[in-house]
Length: 241
Image (cartoon, rainbow, N blue to C red):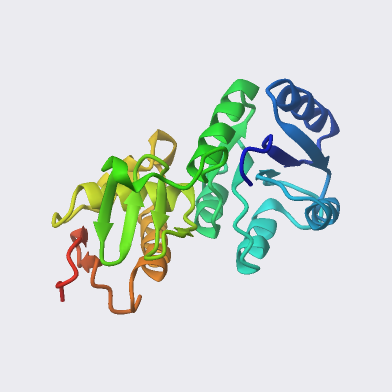
């Protein structure tokens, strides 16, 4: 979307919070629309293009997890920052698996939300041109390349392969630590302090999703391999078996 002003859609049934976020985000230079439920959200998404969705987990009718699942199943890769009530660890795990990019537990500081939104938008390349691959800030494997500067995975044609925040963080960590068996606890730690209590299953689901995006045959991985009872190992080379 080039150098447009970032446009954010806030979906939350709390009218006061919606108004507060709308006012604060506008002050921070965003264009903002808001919706109280999935029906209003769908109407806005049909009419306008948005760079990012701030999505409350607990909504009347279709909840945030269902919305997230539906958007991803329909190949809608809009970045999603999910708002969750404090302590909803299980819901946050499921949300991560469904393709949310980041989380803000309520109550939160609006400044931190803005920082998270900007970080996610940067990773999706908003406000930047095509990644400059001449900088040497890249890691190549097969016909793909991880551009570290723009935090993107690029295919053979230089087109971005959409990754969620968690998927990208794992892939870059693997690529920086090739040919080494990495246990699940280390991978969980890499996902950030807010992930420390997440379960092994989350890593396994993310690995499966990554394989679908980077492996020629996901069921027979050549790059991202399992070492039973030990963890995972990443091979950069093309001649692995």
